[in-house]
Image (cartoon, rainbow, N blue to C red; front, side, top):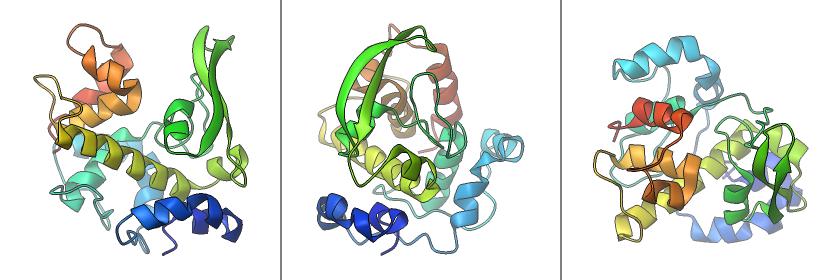
Length: 211
């Protein structure tokens, strides 16, 4: 049960995440796989293996998505890695997977979200405050909390794709569409055929076709 963010952050976080615990199927057990998760920072080792379509080294991360093998899910997570757990990008994307404040707000982790101009990014970006007892410091210090949030985000997006609420453009596989949604949201997916950012396009090339 310690896979839940509440446990990863301490007992004090349980109330905030009770809803997640009730809605989630039996929590995924990643015991003994922490080194696989933390080892995603080894870009020099992981990238060539991903490019060749090889299975990841070490124990696999169990897949939270229907009909997606754990080997494919682990490759996807490796390819989606953008930094270390404590990183904050100019866009305010946080941690291993570059989770944006707007998406964290969708997941109930961040509140008071709004857009404001960032001198560092030289554009409008999303900002917000983590919902107590969660704090930015706690979230940045917990790779497991970030992985849990990433899993929930991907699962929710995948459910919307499977239900037909959102449609993947031609040329995008399931994993490719999830990568676009992660980086650019539903509007980015809708506009993919006509407008796309180069960093997002580069990421999609890495993950498209994994599943």
